[in-house]
Length: 264
Image (cartoon, rainbow, N blue to C red; front, side, top):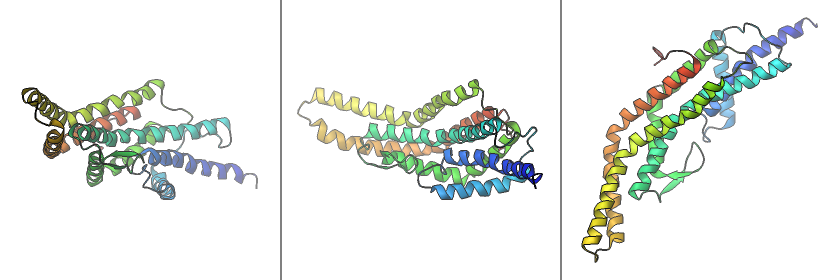
């Protein structure tokens, strides 16, 4: 029966290593990686996706032994690759969370906060509003299916093996955070400029008429102006969302070493 042992280990490795990459991807992915999704549900999803993707995953050219140093390095590399690809999708949600926090702090709405379902920390309600809006838009446009397709494509461009991202590619992931702040600034720049003008106007009014109580009147006016600015910011939501999705897609495809043409 010893001749069955290599066959069993080879079959186990062909399932375990894709499962590690897919599980790490779901752990770090936007929506599925949040605290609202139980770990058991995420594990079952990873197992189901592995079974569905397994027929389309290319065969490993030189499969190392499962219980060896190369096998251990291969397992670690699959976790790093999956987590890196899933981490790229977090920039999409966090850019709008940062934009919502900037708008809330500028308009005086930052005192109202609630628990963020993605990170589990307290965040302004305006940021939560943008998070929910981003999540619904992302699911309505089948964004989760597109990134799962990219995950399946990664098994071709980044075959299973002990190799991981190069230092240049790892640095590229960290520097992509600048794109997140650019998208957030593009979403919140209108509110920042508008509230700057409102506060500057109140400053001039206070100097011209010191008897005006800027604290009692300015707070209510700032909130009303902030709500109007937030209303007008929603008109540009789809444009900012499209730009953020395109940036995430291009960066993910560059990280995988492929082209995004025809993916979405």
